[in-house]
Length: 298
Image (cartoon, rainbow, N blue to C red; front, side, top):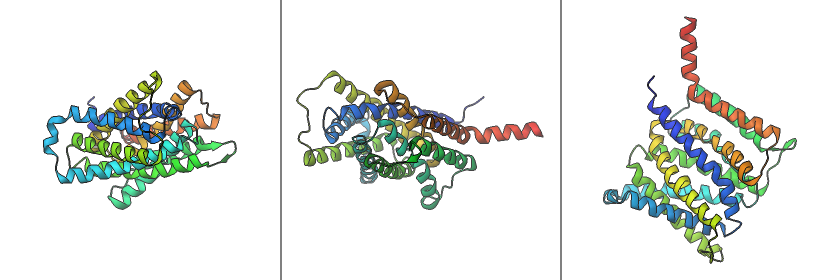
């Protein structure tokens, strides 16, 4: 059976959530070693250098439009990372991951209102299930409690939503490799400026093995690979499905939070993660399953 291009794109986007999910606990431990924006600065400059080296021959195609729109993407991405990374100073990595997943609600609404792309019925069902799952994973005890870190993570979710919609639009207009290179370079510049303004130092005096490994993982896999895949593959799927796939990021953050940091969810949290995964399956395969079921009945 021939696999649809959209399914291949969705599968690659899912692979991105594995790397992003792993970085919550990695970054949380890293910013205990060095200042938050200093870490982001080093991470994204390393990623920027790699992208420039990989796509050096394409740089001659840069024009003002790609620079403008790539800069817009970079600003939205910076705001996402800024709120998310600061949130990690106040909340568990798994909780920040879950609340970031609230973009699954914002994206379909903005998609329908702004870019006139209403989600398909099975995507709507998947979004509804994912919302329930994210809510359950955010419960602490018998009520929903929002700390400062939780609130910052919710603001992050808004900027993630805007970034997804802008990526959907720009990835169909430009060379996605150039667009990603500009985006990440802008992200690096903004991180450096913020660090120089508000933090005691930009470059740590000593790099231990953990910090070196953390920078390699977050820059190579969670930045270069992740954003090249997102920017390239989003043109083959919808913004709503992208947001829905990205709800697996908090599930992955829980897996890695437990494996690397010993963070344990409640039973409600584990049920919520299962509901999110179910919502993803419904959105991805619901239409095909319904068609096969209908043909059998006929």
